Image 1: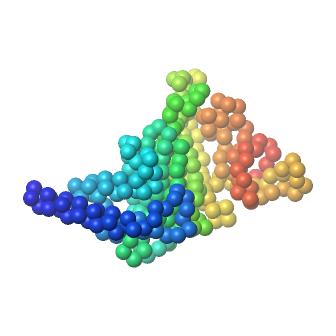
Image 2 (image 1 turned 90 degrees about the vertical axis):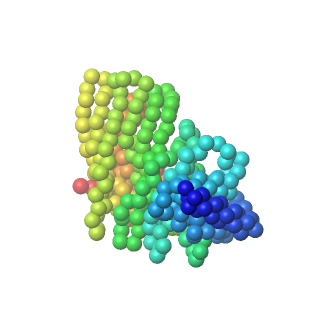
Image 3 (image 1 turned 120 degrees about the horizontal axis):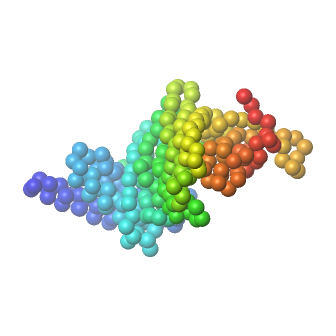
Length: 298
């Protein structure tokens, strides 16, 4: 008990010294990442990997408070939840740390901190219109990992009660880039319409795949389905397949990647969009296109 008290006193002194040291830096406005600013000292982040659980909890509570007051001081007093994961997102010698904040039902934040010398600096800050949970590092290529998190949207009118989904990000062109999203549970206000999907991530040295296995209840029918999304280096994301699309105002078909088959999306089925693909074009424009408008590759 005495040792625990001493350790917590030392932690308090560390955090006080951290505040005094960092208070001389100008607060960084949201989204302005042009000048790297030290956020937290290495010693404080290291406490998040301590062997004693109470040190982790104390460090996480204080780190949460500091980050929220730093980025969104007017909302820092709300009951935010926070989780974190260490991962090699940027292929650096030292891993980064990703903090995922959630304020149900409509707010989520991701903060990525990168280690330089004896401090952790801000690498990315993104806000979302839904809470985020359960960050995880996914093995990827030899030099880096992917970031995965779970999101939840509730009371989406007019039909849906809850939609739970998975998002995956990569580090591309010096920023966090979303490379995959999939709804894993859709619950409606009607007992006869719901869907769940289980994701399995498979990886080897050269190939990275996401297998989805779904179960759908719609009216009096129950059915299962399966899809495979494969990482494509050209498109820098997970895709179903590649193909060509001729826009109405063009004479030459565009190469495209198919991101989703909406016949496997419960919301699309209920809104008569099941005959569409979601595609991405070379200029990174995302479109919904009828399946018969595309030529797909095998």
